Length: 266
Image 1: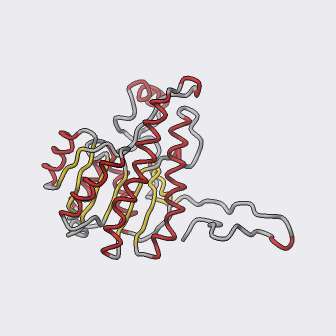
Image 2: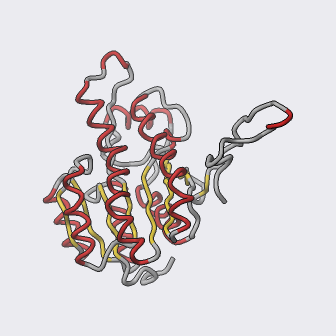
Image 3: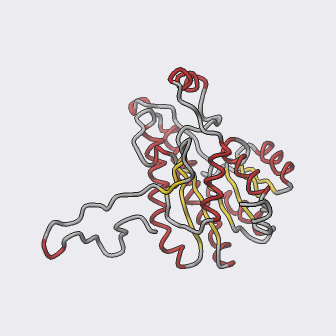
């Protein structure tokens, strides 16, 4: 999309101070959007806002009581048109018996609560405008199993499920919601040991800017309820979910419960 194509739009980006959030903030700003940079590192968020001429909010996305300040910052600019709910953490714990309560609560709070609270706080502004776009950062670990961090995998599957379940109702009101599911990205979440292992195996990391491309795709293409994967050599592409098994009774062959989706919305 050309520069200026999001002129006049207001975009809230969480985890905006680094990695995918920073690349996405810059991309949306270059396209004309006013960016509200949200990050737990308030000084870094201010730097991003200063660079882009936007607003900043210091907030831990897992704390519901802080979301009104994010919504207020967006409303001061005219109300959110775009929400990129990107903030995320890992546990780095493979052995479930070594997982502490604090590690569990932290990752659930940031990766899951941050998406739910952000959607709840910002969608009303979009509904007031009659249109809007929510994009949540999931992961390839939201589509397949990642044994190296099972609880991280749990949270990213949760994001995909939430997005797909929210899509039909929001679509009726003019708001799209999608998940972006990148493979391994060159961000601060990839520590030195993992980098060395990947380099030794000849496995390249994805640039954050490529994930920003997928974010823009979700915002501008008008689709909803998709889990868009990001892999090197691929354009942003919606993952195709299979049809779930239904009853094998003649009178109910292939049926799903009322109100359930049988397959991914088109």
